[in-house]
Amino acid sequence: MHELSIAETIIDNVTNLAKSDGAVRVKNITLVIGPLSGIVRDTMEFCWPVAIKKTFLEGCHLIVEEVPLILHCKSCTQETTPDTIIMTCKACGSSDVEIIKGRELTLKNMEIE
Amino acid sequence: MCEDCGCQEANEKHFHDSSNSRTVEIETNVLKENNHLAHHNHHWFHDNNVKVLNMMSSPGTGKTALLEKTINTLSDEKKITILVGDQQTDHDAERLLNSGGNVKQINTHSSCHLDARMISRELGGFVSGEEDILVIENIGNLVCPAAFDLGENIKVALLSTTEGEDKPVKYPVLFNKANLIIITKIDLMPHLDWSLEKTKNYIRQVNPNAKIIALSAKSGEGMNEWVDYLKGL
Image (cartoon, rainbow over all chains, first blue to last red; front, side, top):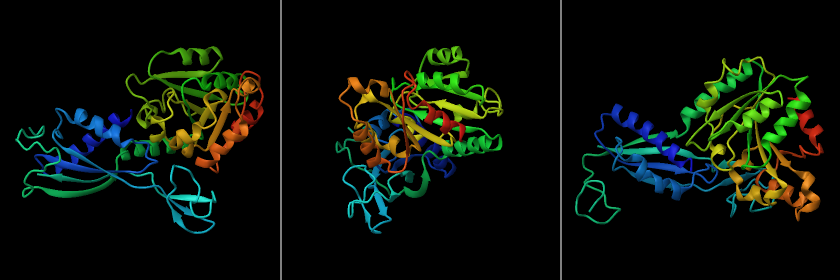
């Protein structure tokens, strides 16, 4: 359940950014997560309303965008997304792969007033 | 009623008039502050020539038992300091102190992982920079510690023979990030329906390149490979 401490980190970051931008309110923020980020979307969405209570972000909607795991295969050069989190090329079965996408834990944007 | 503003639009996905609002692109890593501190830690370790291992596993894998044996075997040759993370108690630190180790307990209380700030507080103080090896025994947890870099050189994931062969594919994030994977309690193999080959295959599915060491701190089997690994850092 480190999602709560992640939520608190997001609140601190966004509060600083929004205030320095002269905002009076943050309407929503967009968070991008990959399957290797270690963040569970449901848990994040569950703890968000609790975490923002009585903070500058109270009432702020959390929008979560999930990006897939994408592997580049050094054997067949294809980029594929495995069905589960395994480091195997879906096209040729090789495990000589590198991770192109999937580790994201990114604060993408905020909508402020 | 809308929870956010008190208006009567019951649709939870409704948005209010956005004429006064604007979208600001941010595009930064949420953990950038932790990663920044981890980067500083890493430089400090490099400047002081300290090799650092971050050991992560579920509770009860045998991290502390392995470290007790490691101190006994290696303390004449290498100066080792250990930071032990637990939510509560200093039981693990006491066990390691009794083995002759230079040990400090970090209690995280409500937190389920160690972060880079908790480590940076110890640098130049308890972790003097004179040690050859710093071992960070992370909190027993296969999920949360994986997200937080501490500035270590080597991430070590441990799993024991009693945990089931497929643990690596159940918790792929942590096992994928590990540079070294240690399989513990192999002295129990004759008593269990557990296959070393199957376990290694599951590890390879999520991490084709990690070094794997199978050992028993109790019987001593495989300990030489681990000790040689530490000597070679």
